[in-house]
Image (cartoon, rainbow, N blue to C red; front, top):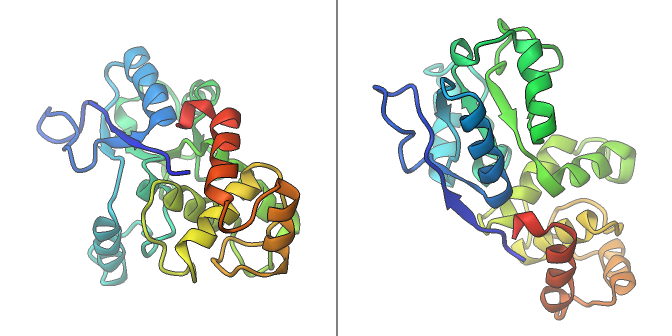
Length: 229
């Protein structure tokens, strides 16, 4: 049920060189959208894309210790870790931020801030959530505890989906199954890695058990979201 990351070549803010290879990775569907965006806006420059677990941990430490002003969550909480988020140089977009938002929407990319104000922190951050938007919507609709952030659930889903460890998940395999079930329209409860009654009931409705989840759910995911696999 894992989705691949693929290398991308994008112009960066770093000495007119391509984005460094350690960052230049994206989910397959995002990579397609990035190639389209780069072709349409050749002057656009990127500053960040993929972050490994270690890179996200370092970014969070820099934020906590005041070396970085922009908020960076601990590992398990950012779509950068799934190759589904980008940071760009807003001075290279060639249009107003509001127009850029409208330009990105048909490409499946969304901002993380509420209003197109270039002076707002994270105005440079955009995401391609793919099927993990369904996890966000599921959590936002009240299907998990109120203290569980929809954004963090979507991030965990996407990170687990490429095979990277999420510290807060009790069992990584169970959490990945819960992510798959939500994206396929079932109701397993939160992505927490705890195989409770709701997860068991959702698996039963899907015609699977924890032991057979991989073989049953993987083809369903591939059929539902072919660009991601």
